[in-house]
Length: 437
Picture 1 (tube, rainbow, N blue to C red):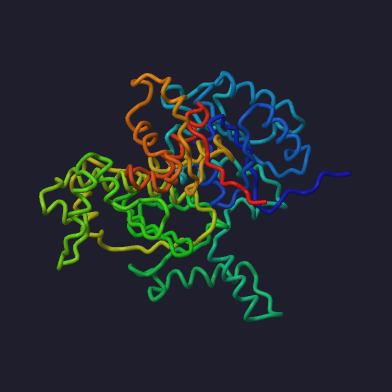
Picture 2: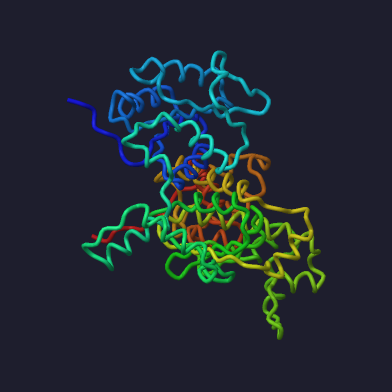
């Protein structure tokens, strides 16, 4: 029986032993319309190539191998793949380091992309590698799907049933609309909307970061939302409302040691007739310097991105703006504390990996724990760092994870991570409510 023909979207077999960097590149490729088959070991790569390569369903049309982390392992993967029937005919691309641009002997002729790279650079080298290698019957799949063309085709089919429009007609309509100044995207109007069920947030952020646009990305889930003020690939300001996690600015003021909790609470209680943002009030009141506020805003934005990346449902909108928010402008003027979108994504994805490792044993925000005092008494005073001691002192069979996070002015994930370690060390145990029979 002949192998089934591949799908309309070209497939890329992507070998990368680093799951974190693989997620970023995978998100960019998928956003551009490619299928991505991820492999983190040689066995994974071989099995995927046999199943979806030239001898399988022919979905894989190119090989993308990371040779920066472990060139010897990547060379072994490449040798194994070219021995699969038809594997030697697949175009190959190497991801290399700047210090070692030719990591695999004998593969110097393969196109290579040096790390760090942008998504547009990755897409370009993949497109160039696919030219002349994709079968003619699948040639249209070389060009990533244009959302405007797809949307217009659906609208024409809905409003003009029974009437056929050729691809050339649709392309002509789209080009005419794009060239019409009246249809130009206006600032302060949403330019991108989507659902987190269909597009991963890291892919959206990477796209916006690589394009260098200025605007506000708003992510919503029920009554909760977070806003990220973006500019030239950087996150200048974060806003949040309605989340169970304490992500407000005050938490990071206390966490950074700039004010004590009771000082901040007393300051917040005071009324401000001008209704200025808390950060501006603290700077004008002499509690923070502009540079300290800039660092606090970076810490808040980093924590918010990590929180939003865990949302699997909800919506997002991006609205271009001409000017930055005044507080974001002041923070950007400091120039010392900046957060790039790429850095924030790496931090957030690392936290997601940690959550995955803890699996079902990760404490929930409403879980309550009991301290096992006889085990704690066996520890020396230097056995636990200060942040873990602060959490352990509040473990009393009444405080939930969320309440401990609020009292210590840290995040719920930080508290959950400590409790997970302490439970494994038999220092605490989860309180289980008795069941009435």
